[in-house]
Length: 419
Ligand SMILES: Cc1cc2nc3c(=O)[nH]c(=O)nc-3n(C[C@H](O)[C@H](O)[C@H](O)COP(=O)(O)OP(=O)(O)OC[C@H]3O[C@@H](n4cnc5c(N)ncnc54)[C@H](O)[C@@H]3O)c2cc1C
Image (cartoon, rainbow, N blue to C red; front, side, top):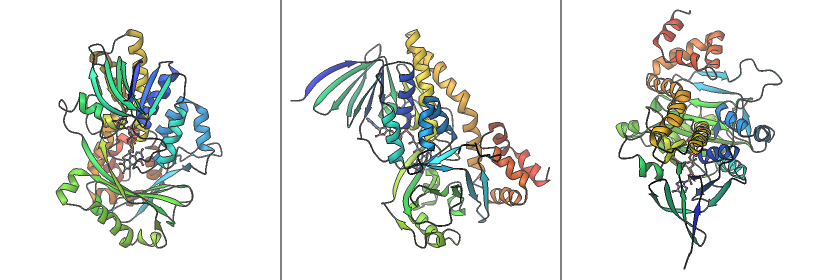
């Protein structure tokens, strides 16, 4: 018969991916005891493009600057990335550096790393006197207790009943916390679907490890990506809106393999490349419109909160960032002993949307614009000939006000008339 044990803590976190780890790092900084429950055993894989942006670096640096230094000095496992290559539907390529004014001292703004490695890196960094981790643990039920939550978990040969004033859903796209608290009350999430394949020996990569987005006409408003990884590996995949797959009855796997075999620009680069693992798919819950992120005694972070950038598909940075903001909100909630939905909405939802809401809106508009291949071709053709336009687009990666220009008709009129 299994043993039974009761535990009490300040915060229960379900899931130890970037969202859970991000929450845990900052709870430990705020000296708040918490228990992280994870169903897998690390290191574990996650289907992803494996590209980490400046936002990922920013949160890691805030959690502990030594961790970022460790990443930037470990080129066996982490590959620094200096820019992005856009390939327009007409096949024209545009190289956009992330740091147009790069000097000797400039650090790479982004990096690529397999999620097997990266998530395990984050997982190991959670170790702290304030953090208890149960991995390989199965959550059976989540119940409200009146003034908090209780979770029944089976871990090794013990059944635990864990109680806390608040629970954090960091349990990814198929979140059980979201299902329990939100699903009946909000519109379904807007989804994209992605496939990931690991190849060895893809040629023609940029010398500064630019990540590549190929906006092939048959995939708009989605794209095929080729992201270089250490040790001659590449993460290759496709991401596309679920509604488009349904509408056009697209077989995503066939479409990706067809592009790799037959696209005149892509195929020669795969002539001697070898598929190293099976092709795997997973959903991307997109941040298209504002949804509730919290309620009485709970908060959602990362994919459980549907925070993936609708244009780029970036979710790791937003998962870590939302974890950081969730921990700050919990600190206030603990101090004021207030875990009500009204309190958490102000302390968490409003803060998150104030920081990321504009970015989501701009990205949602850009995603819609990508439906029009002629517009994409037009911008890339112009930028191809104009250094100043290339510099403007380059700055858009770091400057949200500039990026917003991209989503406005006036931007295209200005390009049209060369202003
Ligand atoms: C094909 C594809 C490509 C992508 N490419 C990129 C990219 O290049 N860059 C980028 O930034 N983002 C990318 N994303 C998005 C990114 O993968 C996610 O946004 C990110 O993983 C979200 O982190 P998370 O911690 O919220 O969720 P996850 O990383 O999914 O972590 C959730 C964790 O919760 C655990 N869990 C789930 N249920 C339970 C349970 N009941 N009990 C206990 N534990 C549980 C899981 O085992 C998992 O460890 C991509 C996504 C896809 C599908």
